[in-house]
Image 1 (cartoon, rainbow, N blue to C red):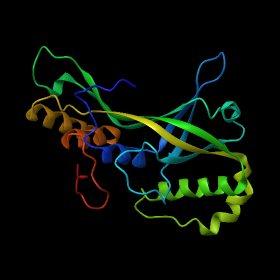
Image 2 (cartoon, one colour; image 1 turned 30 degrees about the vertical axis):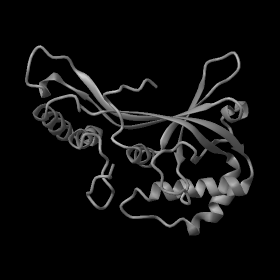
Image 3 (cartoon, rainbow, N blue to C red; image 1 turned 180 degrees about the vertical axis):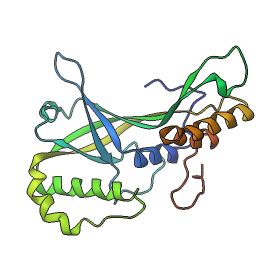
Image 4 (cartoon, one colour; image 1 turned 120 degrees about the vertical axis):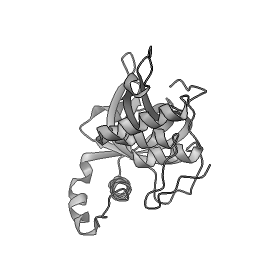
Length: 223
C-alpha cells in the first residue's frame, strides 16, 4: 500500500486499535504461476500480547476453513499480506460548500506484511478459535461466555486450519479530511454522521482527526 505523507496514522496505538476493532481481514498469499489468492477471515491479537505501539514483531492468530485450498499453498518463506479496513465513506463536494470542487473518499486502512505458519493440530486450532471469539466478544456491549459451547467447538474444530502470523512490516493510511480547514472538516463529519451506519463511523474519525476513542471511556488514545 502506498502511504501518503500527509495522511499518516495519528499514532502507532491508533494502528493497533484499528486492527483490534476491525479484525475481519483480507488474508492474501501468493501461488506459483497464478494470481494472488485472498480469503476474508478474522485475524486477532492474542489476549496475552503485551501492549505495543507497533504490530511489527507481534504474532497474530487467524484461521480459515480446511475446505479452502489456500492454506495448502502457503509457504512460510514467502511473505503474505493482511489487509484491515477501518471506517470509510464517500465525501461529496456538498460538504465543502464551495465550487469548483472534486469529491473524494475518506478512509482508514492498515496493511501488514506477515510470515504465515500453518497450524493443523486440534489443540492449537481450538486456542485460535477461542481467541477469535474472545476478541470479537470484547467488542460487544454484553459479553458471551463460551464455556458451555466448548464441547461443540471440539466437534467442529477439525474443519478449520489455524495460522500464526508474525508481522514483519506495517503500513497505514488515515485519510480523514485532515488537509481541509476546520469548518469544512466539521461539515464532512456532520454530513457523514447524518447518513448513519458506516458513514457515521468515518464521521467520528474525521471529527477526531483520525484519533480512535477508547471503548467505554470516551477518551482519545494518547499519542
